[in-house]
Length: 594
Image 1 (spheres, rainbow, N blue to C red):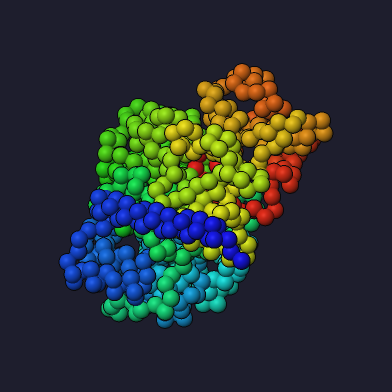
Image 2 (cartoon, rainbow, N blue to C red; image 1 turned 90 degrees about the horizontal axis):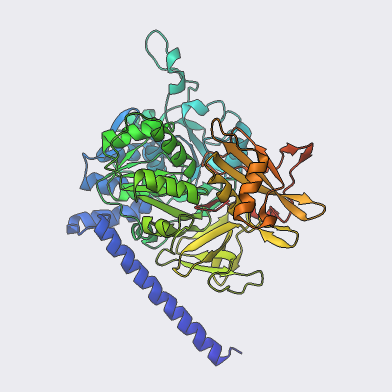
């Protein structure tokens, strides 16, 4: 029988959470009105928006909303020119009709293997309007990975850029393939005498679908609303599909706007890949705000800087390695571009680190915002410039409406200042991995896979991965602390560290370092530097110098590749304490994650 005292406590806690949830939603609504994402619409426009949501869902309705509000405003600027919101809406309708004609139905898997250009949003919104399960494939996947993932995720159709024709050749989806970008610009120098650009596939193109269905009108009502399958990074194993549907909440956009001053009608440069959670989130935010997206097929720092000056870009969304290369390029320019329009540099996707945060703030001003989250937990905190000025290693305060608690190994909450496992709860419905399995849940909160602590200001710090902590001579060591210190050395470009088995100490640290050009720093100097700044047991036993660190497309360091690196004939070994088999493919992002 339920204890009355316990029952009353549960009722109070439940009621309190509903009140908090309601207050958060009102806060999100206010921030969205301030930013211009929400506005007082005429009754006819409001009715049309609600009808579009019922017809296509929250994703599918976005181009139609903007086509009514700002039909002639530029939705996309890319290598092929400009695309207006009205043109994007028409293209999404035509593609939806074309997909239906090919046999795609609501709930069917449609995989996208597309770089950052206009054909990504056209394909995405077209698939959303038929209610597809949209599977976002990593542009760096090999042919076998594409085949494996598309089969595992039951993709009925693959939409790919022409350059990936060979990579997708092994996959045989039931409804075939379509080309997004119809040619391969990387081979433009081999155009035939007629001027026709080279292409590697004869599959139909999205442009063909648009031409055939140009007069078909709005797409019909979808039986189901679209779901998005974002693949985890796979830094420690095969990428997993993360099931995510649209939450009944303003949180996805309102939460970000509560910390970051995006405004309607501005211009966002989006070098971060749109197949990644960071890129997709900001493509959606920009669309809801009626902002122009500047997209480039390939990331080139000088092009990004030129775009900021020419297009008066107000926000730039990047992963840390991109930010580092942009700053390097800027440092090497004799004539600096005018970046005065840039108000926001939004960073996520992997470890930012205090050194890079400080450098970016010094070079670009107080414009850096750093999000901490993952594919599974969405987001937890956002560090603002004022937070980074307090301490550049923080990942910031908890976003309003999000719950973050730190637990010890026994599931007990740890006090402020003590390191614990980070658990997050919000309104983003993570429905588990498509192949089965889930993250650990405590008190309704999901494990991020990281450990960290809160300071007296309520700012969160991520100490490292829960499964990367090593025990060296009885002392707990988190590689991230050592990595951040070494990366801040003036003769070091970047550094990382892994745990290696040690017969005497249990485990030891092995550091991997990329030096600046012409640097004289050696292994002894690195060890001495760490010893001067940290406890002796945190000094790496070996230091390996590399030309570059292995990374995946979103900038995360592939530590499993470094674990294979031999030192004096001995490979590194990340054992079961360091990589848990049930946590393969997790996708941490933000400062000191990974």
